[in-house]
Image 1 (cartoon, rainbow, N blue to C red):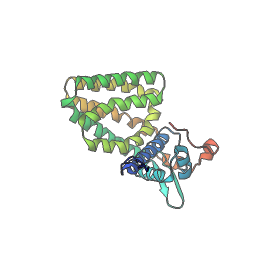
Image 2 (cartoon, rainbow, N blue to C red):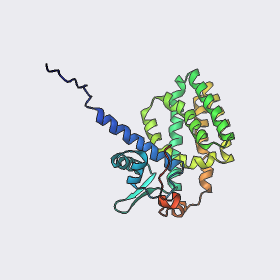
Image 3 (cartoon, rainbow, N blue to C red):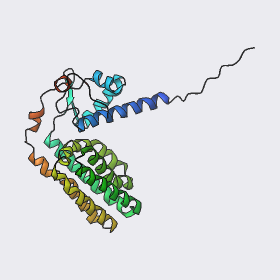
Image 4 (cartoon, one colour):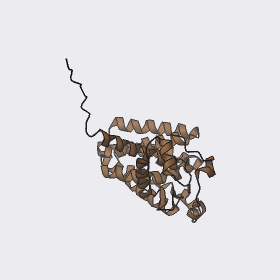
Length: 251
């Protein structure tokens, strides 16, 4: 007697979803390694080494590097090198202006419908932010700061705002790591309180102004960097220079 062999109907889109997730995960992992300094400015990027580190093929890595080049975090010259972009003061200044404008817009669009629960989420994030600064935990401070400002970004329900921030925030975060590791970042706690206070009062203009002021506090730090920072940090580096040939540790 013959028995039919049952085969589970596998969705045809499975491979497409998998490739999309691999590409996004590769992008986020490399981006975060650049932002937190694991991959230093000027360091050469080898797609084979990165693929081995991430446990993926070279294709999603190459796609991620192309996307990071568009975001200004990677520089590439075909046939010569792909490397982490130096800390370009002009690029950071431009990104800071754009992110400040987008967060101000997010608050303006979110505030008419901002709920009590969302205000509580902002307060809780700022409490974590203050604790992280006291503990000198830069990673936790950045995560809490993201959560704080992310409330308005989510509440405004404007996909254009999120798309623009996705591109330019990582450029700004490279500088913010310097700020949050110093005493200059402590003032953000009070500024966050001011934003929440104005939001709770329904003061759209006041909340927007407080948000803009908060993001503009990066300007003094930019002014402390030499105008030729790009030239100073632009020399090619390799993983061997920094780690003896190793690859970054996954986050």
